[in-house]
Length: 285
Image (cartoon, rainbow, N blue to C red):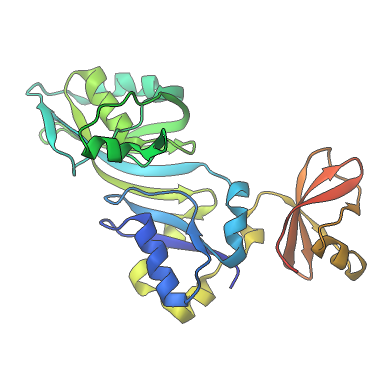
């Protein structure tokens, strides 16, 4: 099998748990996901089957989420599963909340939660946190393309948000940081990933509905998920491509990537250089 699965990850499972379940269902070891989704979160988790694992770096990596922020409390993990570290009695209103949205839009600097899988000096941050070791978590730049307030309940102090962002954005950090800016504390109570690249929530397959047969029928061709132009090769060029050799071509910009295709099958990812396609990832051979 060769392709992608758009899996709906349920809350309570790690992304690795999903991969392990699919390995057991299919009997295939070469399976991986395209980006970790927190255990408490749910929604779109693209999974690569077979040699599609070699294409992860070429997939569009923009993300979209719907989240519920609970104001009034801050936690160690910045979500509902952490220990409470602070409570605030003051309430905010919708107008106050709307005024801070711009501070979290565009390119922003963000400090990831200490309870995260980011590695620092060879160890994951959550390993330091669980051992009670304090570390200086480095700030990173992320981009928030869209941030909208969808609903706000003054009585419960819950806000529903929609966010489109770049890879590596922690929505938990946004919830916590909003609470800091507003002076009312905050944590992420629920998170649903609605989009990852070209994979969307409305087409995601619930994990508990997948079996060996439905995995096969649900596989998505890499040609549907990559943003590269396709270049059809004939049989005379097929062996050259399979052997990793460059082939002459025209009509592409210098350094442009392309998907080389033979009879509707992806053969290689190549880069156009000085009138030739140089093979970067050969997938058939």
